[in-house]
Length: 72
Image 1 (tube, rainbow, N blue to C red):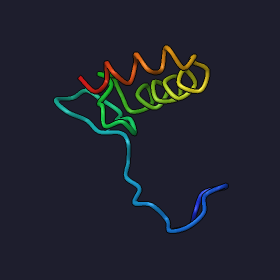
Image 2: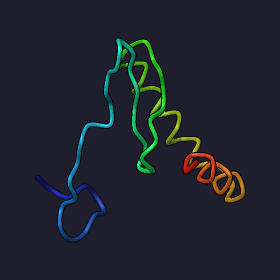
Image 3: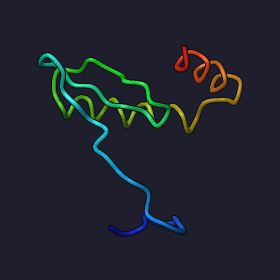
Image 4: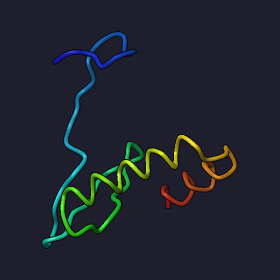
């Protein structure tokens, strides 16, 4: 396995972020939270893209509140 663009050092363990449970799809965040349900894997993939976009655009105060909510 190779490093991704911009990564240095040992290649981290990677796993699929998507999983199905009871016929519904979810994705897991780096923070260890499961988000869903979605009707199918493509919808979950879109949800993940939306989540990443939100995380990249959110203000630090909003992110702080989100991290606190995900941890509880």
